[in-house]
Length: 489
Image (cartoon, rainbow, N blue to C red; front, side, top):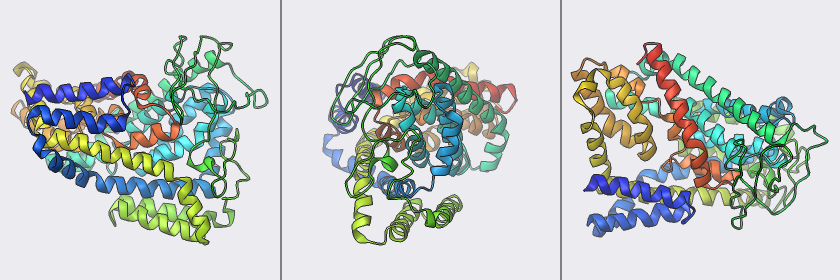
């Protein structure tokens, strides 16, 4: 019964948010609360929620201060050279812009943190997508998949969890998987190229002078971008707006508008600036060119300390944010203005994380996760024993999407590894197969970073999900196939 209710709870959540019957934050709270009562454990709801909040509180703190830190770094111009280089490559060609999104997300993902990747990528690329009326879900989908592939780095999380759960060396998992993961990254770039060509056919190739001016106050996301069919508009800051998108460059397009990401949203204490086609306003008053190398070294030191695990990540970002604000904006009113400029993102993301804590707390506390995992393992036919590497790879797609990484790697993976050993499949093969589902995992509703991505891009989570799932599954299967072909899995 718990197995059925667990799957029913997840299905209900996904259906409601994809149909836009509930907001993600409301669905993450109310649906698990309802199912907790249906399971007969409503009296323990408070305990489950507190446990979930306790487990995710460090993540929420990390995201809060990471948003402030990188928001300030964007404000002061640290990433402007990277943005200019990418935009110089992209020009006004939709194909180059989508490929540039994949490349930028992959490069920034080297720090191992999804939230950082999404903040920088969206801040750089959002103005281009808006100015050219490109599909914002193409941006979020490509960024999420590129980050998902790079998330398998030993300091990214999944590989370390697999190594810890199975008591093996993370290097022995990751290094042999490099060829397969490289194929996966190439697949993301190729997919970005294909999606970019579709966007180019829909929009045409514009010169800088021909790029259309912004039309204010309408947010549009073309869910069916590149498909040559109509596409629905989704909500902006105030509500839901619709727009059609026909095939070809001459089709009617939704208007673009609204402020950009945190770096180009405000220029002073509460003021707003137009999105510059170059991505970030080169004349914004928050720039601190004389402190460029200080900010660069501070960021490098922060990322190095994070990789070396010198301090917990939330503590590092707390200290980093305090230093960045103090040095770049020594006057208290200026510091308050910068914090206020990024308050919307902080509140939205941290609120979503704590709402997700209700979902994960109920899913874990009621035992639904354990029952779902055991049911899936028990359904594996005995004849598939020698193919447990393949089975693990395939199971990693739905399980890491519907479960947290902790739940999968510490709850399910040891069981799969034990079953594999009984049929002569090495623990290392099982561990390597377990990380192939990460391109899909990064768009899971249980991943806090995805809310940074869709929030800053002003994309509805349901629209992002409908667009990205099929492509993320394809990317994961490419990695799995490459791993099998190369004899790694």
